[in-house]
Image (cartoon, rainbow, N blue to C red; front, side):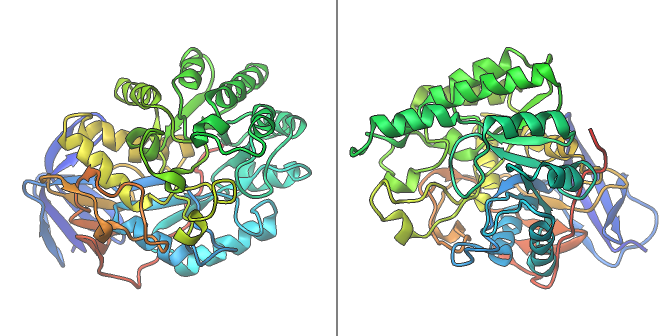
Length: 438
């Protein structure tokens, strides 16, 4: 007796689609195909609807511990699953930063108690902590090592010596915020006492280019997997595309760099690191997305309150919320013909599962975890406050055309959210960890 059979859905992978039934038992997909033999405790018709693997967002900042007034594991994970994201990976720039075993274990305990989504936890690369990074990421449960090459938030800026040590002494996936601190320092001096026209002027493309050139040098010296987070400029994209297939780089893009640019009148609500860029950069990112050069989409969900964002430019924090908008934006792009539903599945489920070693995630196949989203393609709507689920209560995407939230979202075989609402608030996600080491 199956727990659930999803009948007649269009099951989508990164390479195609098929109309099939999906049977679930004990939180696992046990059958995909024509009508399965045997009964089910519950049946759901998905005729005329897509059945997709739940999205995996490997780049969120849930602010817990340290700043729960902005977000915590409960509020952030609710927003995620209602928006179709069934697995999140939290970044280390919390307070305290996740740069010790004790800090990592404390964050994992918070997530276990509160997260409605499955969760992975990054370990921060920091001076003097390389041995702990090796223990937690090479040998232990951390989903990767996050490195900040340029000052952004928190005390996680690494100097070049630490970056070299991390490259040479660790094997796990390194995720990089690639902006050169030397270039940023020059710009801070150049703009001292003045407000730049846009945040892009204070943190120009040159900072990103210089950083990725250094990463390429290090990866030539010691090839190892490097995931470049939130690629934002045509110039850094050109540097990285030139070595694609030669060096083990993978590239992430964030929705705000695809949908927003520095000509839009967002003020501090558009302040984010790396910054919103000129329209030409946004066009280059879309081109790279459709050509398969970009590998994953990460929300870089980084909420701050409206009060904090209302401060003068030089005092306002950088970061935008967005985990609950990823599906709506990308499914909207599918509806408009800007990318295929198969490409969306690859970017948001299959590729992150593969690159991060989450073996049971990201696919609708027998033996995989039953993390699923189901939706019927529909007319687009102007994204509104009703779709804003983060604790800070605002979004830079209001007014953008997008798809409504998924019809149903399952985590571990349990229906947890439907049509923009939580329906099982008692469900809890599970820790995801790499099933293979590099």
